[in-house]
Structures are given as C-alpha cells and as structure tokens.
Image (cartoon, rainbow, N blue to C red; front, side, top):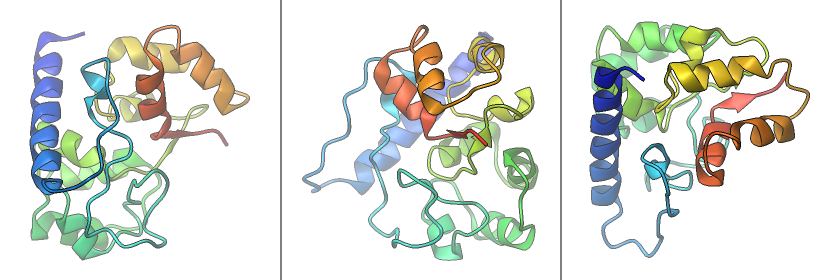
Length: 181
C-alpha cells in the first residue's frame, strides 16, 4: 500500500473517530470493538440527528441520492456548498459520480470521512477498480482481492473470500459498502 495513502487513511480514521466521539459524549452506546486500524470506523454508529426514512440505505449509511440537506450537513466536513452541489447533481449511477461532485468541495481525507456514513453500495460483480478504491481503508491490495473472486454468487462468498485477508469485524465493515446484483 502506498505510504501516503496509509497516512491519509490513518488521518481520516482519526478525524472520524474524533468527530464520532464528540457526537457521542454522554451516550450509553458503545462502539463495536475493532482489531484493525481500518475497523476503527464502527458499523453501528449513527448520528443522533439522522431521522429514519428513505435516505438510509443500510446499517445507518445515508444514500447520496436521497439524503436531505440536513442529513448531509450533519456529516463531518460537509459544507452547505458541497451539500447543495450533491443534491443538485442527483441522481447518481455510482460512487464515482458522487466523488466527482464532492471532489470540487472537499479534500480526499474529508471525502473518506464522509464515505464512512454516505455511500451508494457498489455492485461487487461490476464495480470499477476506481470505485472500489473509494471505500475508506481499501487500497490496491484489497481492491485486487475484491476483483479476484468475481463473479460473486452471494454475500457469503464475499465474506469467506475477504475473511482470508482481514478479520470478521473488517469484513462486516466492508460489507456495508457492497451489494451483489
């Protein structure tokens, strides 16, 4: 993995954790334990301001094509201009399109922090490598592993194959970003 990408990933993770910790002060909920650096982005953390509804894809992830401006502004580093641009560019075919909009308003580490909560699940069988690399914490090696086992027949196959390289907590985190069509 590229050393600058590792540094950016660590910076994004630390920023994300600082924001989540600040938002959760006084909360009785505990974040899921993590065994790896990439797993420090808990799958069960959702901002208190997030209302239930169509904007939530799964596991508390917001759909970039349906999230309200209020929901977008609750994300770390999201400015009003970025939220407006995202809303104005809808609908999105994939995360490459989302990233193209947000790249005009946010740095790569800021976008990585946002993608921990805002994501359009990518199809494991057809996603381009460029889109897979947008998943926070995924580098060239994991991108290769995602692509190597195509075609995926079911999510269990994904869990089994990725489980050869990362622990169960990380597989569960990665699963939040994918679908099989």
